Image 1: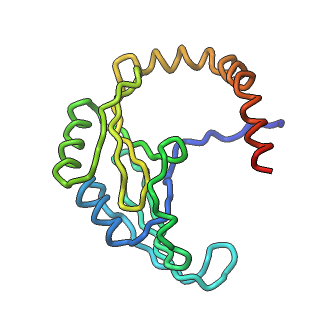
Image 2: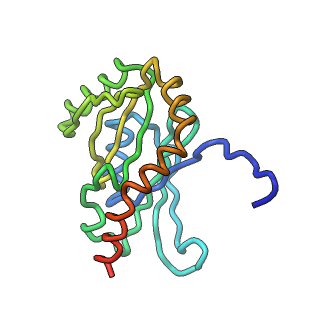
Image 3: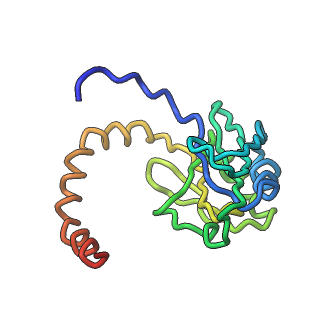
Length: 180
């Protein structure tokens, strides 16, 4: 590819499907303390114009970005809201300190939201829990060594990927063959 791309400056929002707008609002605003910034109702599917009423919710993070949800009653069967493995999908939010992270753990415990951790990932510490929609959430804080670890890892990342690709090629080929 040629040419210079503009810089992507950040994530405006990450969006997920929710079971119920009010249930989701109560969790993100009342339990996690994220202010509700928009509850938008639309009557048509974006891009197609097909009639499909839905609501789009936006909750503000302190950095100016958002976590967003779609309440789309059509096709919102319970199977869509089963708890998802963190390996398949999770959303991580950052706090400034370990104490702040533990304050969230205490708040989640008080709200009877199962929460595990903190887990030491050697560059961040994290707690994990699920929202009412089955979405795996993480609250994390950086270790003092975070920036150094990331800098060191960046220098080796392509070689590590190449080694991993070679190591896992046979299993991935078997997975493809089994899916056929």
